[in-house]
Image (tube, rainbow, N blue to C red; front, side, top):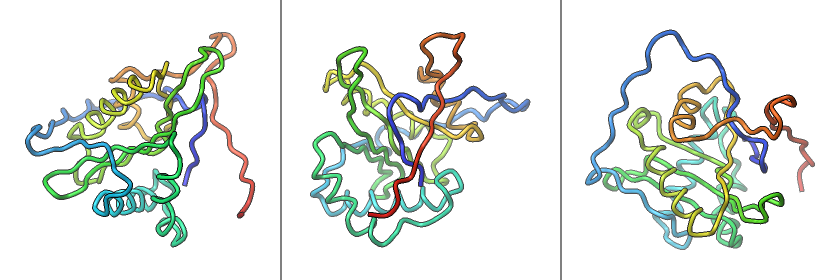
Length: 192
């Protein structure tokens, strides 16, 4: 799994394929329901774990299932953190999308920021603007919290995600164009 950090996760521009992208089909509002996750709700908790596990198994999520430890403890750990929130998408009773977010802080703006840590849409529902609708709810929550910006990271080879993020206003992070875009780095600290 990729651990998301602070300001260095803006998408890096990559050349788009020569073939035109498919026109997304937006699911009707009556069919798709976007909700703020309630970590105490058993159905929401199960949806969160199942969707995050599906993402973890996907090549874009690292290609490995969630550990038993994560499956058992993640929801209670998220619930214990007031800076964490999640958004779920359901088509009827079927959970089809998830966004996990964490509030951080921009020292330059002296205001909160919201980092999109995980964004999951089941393969069967990609290209239907599920992610876009969930991110609209994330933005609404971020504005309620007084956040100055949203941040995220994306793999350079994930062209569909990059197109989504750019379409809704995300761009590479830079302070001075002469210094280029920020890069996302990590250092594992080992098992605790």
